[in-house]
Image (tube, rainbow, N blue to C red; front, side):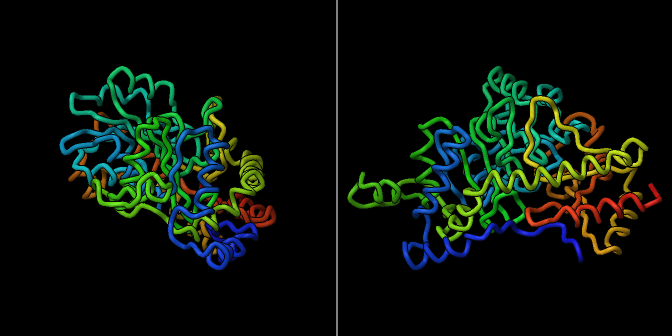
Length: 378
């Protein structure tokens, strides 16, 4: 491909910091100096009480499911249009997934469909902030309060995106971030769990440290550490955190560059939208997005298939996104779709994502726009 769909972000200091972790700090395991810097940066910038780096957003979601005390037979409400990890984390706890339809404008869970899906078994709601655009969190939080439910934000795509002045991932009981190589800020594989209630800190640390009180030991609070509860290995290497730290130092620079590309696409492709050839992303007034992705929608699946092939022939890699979970074998086994699927499947078959990454140039973005305008089978 002349123009890749994604390239991992790299700002220049990553290798220096990895070398520092290995040769100066001599600490490659977790909770080293770089891990602490990243966590503190997020606490300050996103105004959250606690942040724990994890090995992935998948593991952050698994931790959240455990800390929320999800039990076998509980029901968890979420959109079907999401990555498999959103559901897997709760299925591993024995929960039944209840999928509800999405809004066609934002591709987020339709907040008006949630209440009808609530039963006496419902334990949690999992809003997914698609493309870094916030769900309607006021309505979701009000429902959660009324029915005594936990809210676990899947903000994998929502790092440095906002809802009415609040950082995504800091509004519900738990927030889960991704720092995968496809995300705005990366540590290769990695994530984070955020929460405001300090009572979750000790069980979260134990869970993350293989069921031990090792974190207390390193703080000098106990003279030795031991196995105290259920746990696993959710703690990333400090080398991964070193890579991430280089990008958090330049977070606004990365954000501005991505927004520049996003705005360029949005402006240059507006004529196609006015012609009715494509639909562009919608950003509600309550949301400040992070330019995680730029997507378009075309008429139907056949059109999308032809268009993606057209772009590929011209050396441009563009991709479609999620296949709805409720249509999969595991989705049918572990969950059910509540209500009518008006938009989830239909919209998922129309949407495709354009190249978007920190090192993408405006000249390359212009090539993408040119190819889209030259396609004549909309």
